[in-house]
Amino acid sequence: MNFMSGPLERAYAFIQSWPAFRVFRHRDFRLLWFGALISFTGAQVQMVAQGAYVYDLTGKKTALGLVAFFSMIPVTILGPFSAVLVDMLDRRKILITTSVILMIATVFNATAASIGTLTFVQILAIALIGGLVQTVEPTSRQTIVREVVGEDDLAAAVPLQAMTFNLARTIGPAIGGILTAAFGIAVCFWVNAVSYIAILYAAIALKTVVPPGARRGQPIKDLIFEGMLFTWRDSSLRTLFLMEGTLSLFGVPYIFQMPAIAADQLGLDPAGLGICYSAIGIGALTGLVTIATISNRPFKTRIVGIAMFTFGLALTTLAFTKSIYFAAPLFFVTGFCQIAQFNTTNTLFQLLSPQALRGRVLSMHLWAIAGLAPLGNLLIGGLGDLIGLTPALAFGGTAVFLGTIIAFFNRKQLKEPQVMSENQI
Image 1 (tube, rainbow, N blue to C red):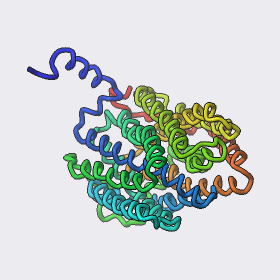
Image 2 (image 1 turned 90 degrees about the vertical axis):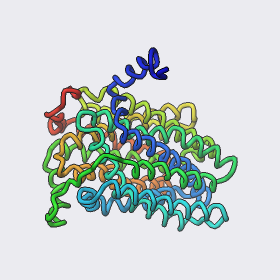
Image 3 (image 1 turned 120 degrees about the vertical axis):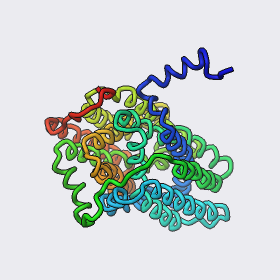
Image 4 (image 1 turned 180 degrees about the vertical axis):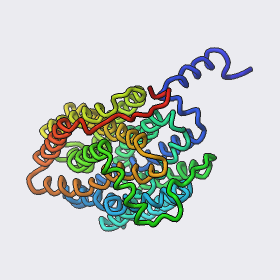
């Protein structure tokens, strides 16, 4: 008897017909999706434990910003340059290598936490190693996704691939908060170390051939600046880059201040901190499902602007909120809007760039997100210690809001992709 016959077969076919889920018919996409989901969940479990530990150890908001700074500064310095490696080398081998490095680094911290010798300096050192890996890993993984699903399914695949991180951000922090409160931080580090096995297996098992994008024989200098110049000379890509950069610099750093927000502003313990992170994750997950569902609609640039505008208002309001009952819905909104802007922009960057430049152009999108964030983390963390958390968060939200207003008056610079497949119209 065929297990998939009758009602089950019809239900499966119905789900597969949804644009948002059609991409799961690709075997390699399923491997990458589930591998990333498990790996990201482990990272989110560790993030809650590490954030609570750092704030308890130092009592400084600047320390929280410093950890984020060390984890992101390599992208700021090397992001556009490392994209050349992604375009020239085997992206599957890059993904395997980076997974192994991250696993080893996490085992080091897990061991130190288990024997009680984990220091702030060690956390900074491992954060820096992770940051170096992040200069190539996201670009490699995302360009592999395009080759795996093809251009017809790309608009739906991008938000679904990003959904792995935000599903993890929904369940991982809650698990991390519970484990930290019950067993301490070491367990959370070990959970993260083991989780890297999933993405490592997915990378090894890929069958799709992923060709390098760059032409061999070109000078490295030309390869580097080719992607930068293409992004800056295209009015749409340039405007999208500046909008993302504004949100990353002034808005996103609030996430890295969550241990301080939870403890000082909302009066919560580590389990409560996990709930705050999960509220952001639920909002982001909802945003991804929404974006994936409307991925075929030709108004992507409007989504970017509306999401940024709403984020600024929500963050400014959050700055003055003292109750978790009011803060949780605002966390939901910021999570929704952040992912709506970043992932819609991701799709636009890929659709507006030629195949030979795609890795380097996409790295500029990732640089706008992660490259400017270290400066924002130091800025908001420093302001939090200097003038207080409430005015620091309000400053960030207001800056994002004003950035949206400026973008609105320059909206003619934005254009929708002109060439779309039948499935994207």
